Length: 469
Image (cartoon, rainbow, N blue to C red; front, side):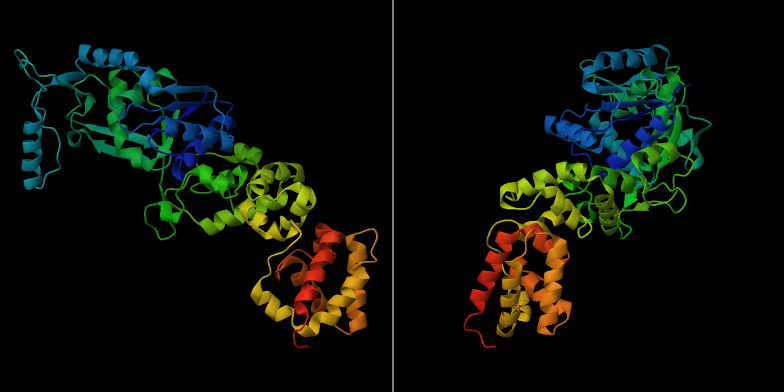
């Protein structure tokens, strides 16, 4: 049997963390077993679905590298097929027309709530006889079995039992003829040969309804695996304040797609104590047997840590290509700074995102540097003038401008001044970068280049003129 999974987002918003994890789990399972991954857009909610949301979902999937084998399918292009399925259910008496007015249904609901009963349709039209009311456009309801149990064999939660008497006759077609969610999902899964449904456990209660529709159409149940939802670190439902934003926003904030995929895979799935997986390793090791039964907690700090690991491991060429647009967006261009490959090699261990790398790299571009007043007050008092002048004089003689030679010069000046290396390197760092944080001083000097370093030392010395020693 060929395993077929699917990812069916509704285009009513962006591709968020929960949706991306669902897509990933289905993609990994299909890839591991040499199966097919189906991508479809469930856009029958015409009032809320937008072209912009469709494009955002495509963009997020492409950035994450979650390629699909079939699709994209759009439900709005399959209405004829849904109407066929509705007609079939009616023909075999698995569904019926309901003519109940909105007023009757509202009154029924109010009475049930007053009696503290679960609101549900009472089957008033289930066995209706005679001519239908004139001028009333009916809905179509599923004829749900009223006795017995339905057992969902879930690969995460085990056997989950539903009493049929607790399920009402849900609407599968509205009065205007448009199909409802449960009907379209089932027909799509049947037509597309879906063998495994991996989705959030907020859909678990929908499953018995969908199974009744599927069996009414003569379909075969897929394997179900309902994954617990993702909560914030505080245990509450994940929201924007926890980091539940579009996956493309993580892209824009400087996360690598493989880092986000790695982190999402570990949100609800485990493989021993391993934390970092390549894409190939995830495909080889992912299974639904080790999906967790309890809710996962989204932790932005952990995601940042994972991204930092990837920044340190990704090949330089790939890092350069990925980081280049971030530097360009910040106005940091190659003609005004060092080679990007060399700069990234120096900075990749010092930041957690590409955006942070760009921020830390600002001092390496342009002739002037923005001086941090606190750093200057601490490390550039008037008394440091002699040290900076000695460094300026010694550095002017360095040729070629290589970090090994630069390190030797800084060490020699420190010895000549009777100071520790840090007492010389830190004022020098502040003078040429404007801050107390940068790569090793010899690497920093080499990246800045001779002309830029000497110019900034001159500016620092000039600012010291007139200050008390």
